Image (cartoon, rainbow, N blue to C red; front, top):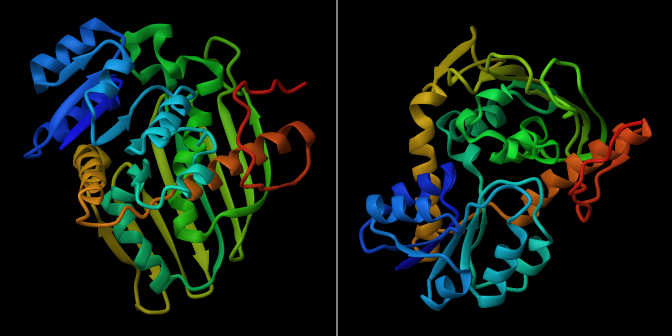
Length: 337
């Protein structure tokens, strides 16, 4: 099987590394940077291409799109035009891929769903359904520190730019699994603002209040100015409550089904993340080879992106905004006045 990797930054290198360990896979790489092509060729034996036309002439069976946020659209459309199975890293936009992918039922069209492959997310979903009962509400707060994201890459790195800031990018990333847990939002009140002291004019905090399709309320806030990582959530239902910590991998559930709270340890994210990346990309290849089904759709990814779009519109208008799955966030983030 021939797999063409598009881009070999941090995520692209991970994908090459994990697929290099899989038998009967030949890797190709398209990257405009000669140093990255040389590194991938030396480390993984990848056939390297400086031009996308030459990469496609190699006739790959599948494509992995690991270019920065905001740049994946042409490559996703190229894969659909050529009838190629493809995997695309998480992004704030789906570029209309949901509608186009639906017209290609034999293709595996796979938007990334990394969080769903973390043990804590995979194992917690059925436990919540079993023990919490009908949802009343959930909340999740995440702190991630932007200067710690690839500090040696400088302004070249996408997270240093306002439109693709980490606090903005992580909203649909978190919503993908939260929507699977609790159902997606149908209406949102949101706010994005700068509260911290990071240099530049980039907003550092996004906060959403959401009315959920299946009932209950959701609250999600992400900041990128606090120098410590934090990623904890809690939910409350008619039969109990649960709390979870993505960083430590620990969770606690208190419900009518047990006399005392039950504690779980699914492994700290630092210990399980790389294995989760490997499981994700191998699940994609298994789906291409017909061994299993890829269940994470562009439609679900688009719903998460549409929720971000509604939240940002709400921040500009100071009102609740319905979530329209056909509306994606602005490519250039509007400035609040």
